[in-house]
Length: 398
Image 1 (cartoon, rainbow, N blue to C red):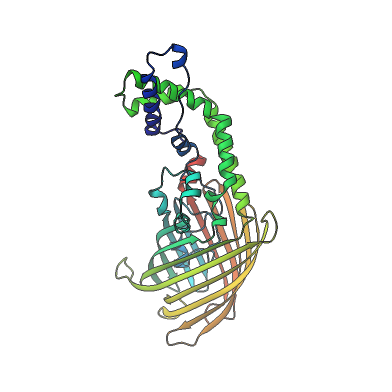
Image 2 (cartoon, rainbow, N blue to C red):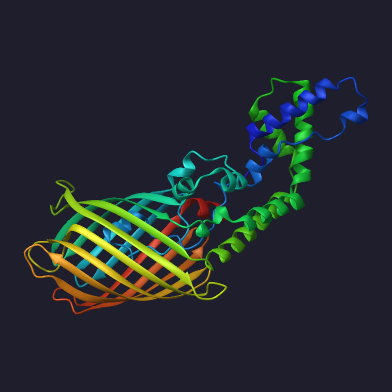
């Protein structure tokens, strides 16, 4: 992360340069006094809310969830991806499916300079809900008993509770503030003082030159690396607080499907909606219970018949979890009902074990195994695998 940005340096430098120019006739000792720094510009660089991401259980993209390619039937609460990719696959009695999704958090496209303090104090509850939202587009390929199909989906998810908002964590703000004061403030004050003097001598200096001056002023400093280490520690502490709080996520998506052998002729393939509420049982959040619900309406299902059958499907259940900031294991059971067009309703129980593992910052692996019992069409075992990449977190972790 770069601290500060060129244009904020110029703003602060111009103000300081103006002060130096007004006191040009003052004694040299007076000119050597460091200029005041604009707190707003300073905060926007070292406490930038857009850059402050907690790498906690990056869920499969909402589009994969809508397509049914994700190991989980309803996303577990986590931190939305600023920009990410998801590759998922699932195999079971109804066939094999593989899918890909691209996801973004649209709120942060227009909030690049918002500070953590500004986010806490200047945003409304609907704005923060939007900030915790993720949208995605995805597609999948189905191979079921020799039949093939392509599906497309657009979907969105949001966290409903402020308690699960890592940017709304006051302790995180205080941690970053203390780290900056301890490791970086003095260096940047000196850099801005030098730039202010340069601006006093040449007010038309361009921003590229200012940025080079900043880099030279901070060259050889160990403060940047030390601050990044402290920043990661602040984020890890915030993530540990999040898993100890109740969380609630909701999502919905709509799809298209074609049963042609070529990528054409798509028709409407229904909508899906899902939700999960998770309640920790221990102070550290290590043990938790959760409830899930999902509905798929007017969707085609591949159940081993000559052609897919449309149905409205409903699922409700719950389970228990063992979790930390680096892994999560869920055991669950759910009741399912599918009301097929032209066929009798099918009811069954779905048992699943789902695990998440963080391979490195921004890179998660999620897998599942389970069994369906009591179905007239889909009895048997199933498994799924999903690779999740949050590009922003992965890039910062390299």
